[in-house]
Amino acid sequence: MDKNTVLLKKAYYAFNTRNIDNALATMHPDVKWPNGQDGGFVNGHDEIRSYWTRQWGMIDPDVEPVQIAADANGNVVADVRQVIRDLHENVISDEIIQHVYSIENGLIKNMHIQHKAI
Image (tube, rainbow, N blue to C red; front, top):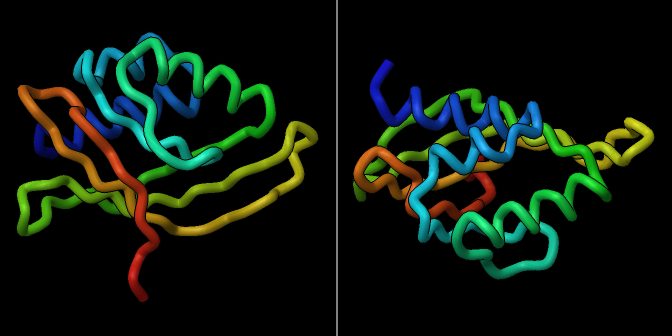
């Protein structure tokens, strides 16, 4: 398993177990992160911490990578099964999406979400 795959698996595990500190440890201090709820992006560890804390108070997302590979542009693309539940464990959505990462000096520098082409 290459170092980028190990990094992303660590980040996904930390996110899914709600360990914000471990998740943020995989990210560059100036990381740019998508705000999947409201649109746009949040920047840096403090904004991500606030965004995730608010998000987890409203929904219960789980993201599991099913495939991770580099693309032709030097990004790392994770095909991810994203299951979002409400706080009563009812499934709101269950889909495969793509998370596209830029990794710099062994840390996630930015990520954006795109729908997987079929």
